[in-house]
Length: 452
Image (cartoon, rainbow, N blue to C red; front, side, top):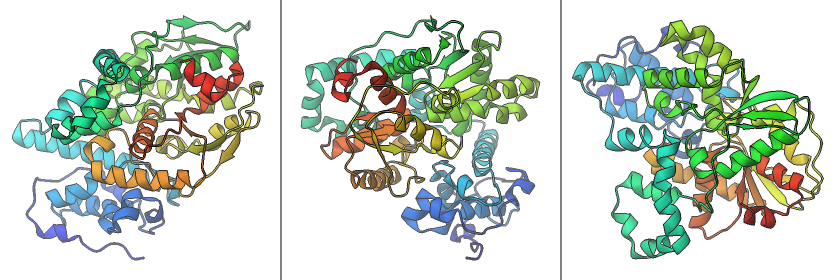
């Protein structure tokens, strides 16, 4: 397939002076072979070349060379990208597409803000994405009324009245995405010691924001598994959001501020590795070194921090842990999180851990490399495309008739649970570590879910 022709949007007047958005040599790394198109979720859905990685790079290059104006139409094609980075896995030339699209978005936002002197962020982006979702304590407090409504079943009455349909679309989506919260779990203590001495490793557990507020039972499971593996687990209370929401939204300086706090919270003198059980957060933490152009004086610290970050599946796979003894006779579909499979290149390790569990049958699905449509806050800001993608994913999953769906990312879990709920299905969605934890405790899945 030849390189895409000049998009129709180029006939429209320019929106901004678009000089110098992305280093030109980076855009030239794409040879337009088209191997990325079959792995791009938005291209598979729309069939529009402008919605493929190749097409978007062509757009960015044309804008950089002033052949194509940066119009709303052109920017719309770029905004529709999930940043799932499946194209990076497929690319034979090693194009770092994620860096290209993120740098471009950041430059556009800063240039427009400089031209107008005002931020163009929406109320939802400002007050919810950047102020609520990035603060685990604030989010936890907000979830108390939701937990009470679920406990009293008032949420079902509210749904029956149709009141949620009166909310703005992003808030409707938040209501829809809210999972069954279950009983309140106490925060993890600052330190949990292994019973094995000497300890094999000193690890820091990164909590995240949404993950800690909604999936704290996963953190407890992770801590137990790490303790069983001979690790002392440290949970620094001063850690903060990884900064992914701000960075991907074009607020790199705020992401740098988050990175500074996390570097201080996890000093090398305290922990050898920093373990994370959320794929999206893990990808951001591992790429803190990308922030060095915003804060050159932190270059060494950012790089050293990134080098100590390990996904929990990746970390356990290196420890040669003892196989668990509790049988779990289940049909399990493992759903690949994009920021684990593509951004971190971790594919085999979660499967290896699951296959250690006695009597567990691991099932594979069609298009395992295609995004479920969660993509951080994408399912809130791009509801139409997100719904199309999760329907595609759920259909593939249900073909295997699973008892449990395993997912290593909080955002994916929320997305899949909401889609299953919409179909009236009650298939548990658990992290691979939770299945490992259940097996280590000798509990069936029904017993394990009741114990939380």
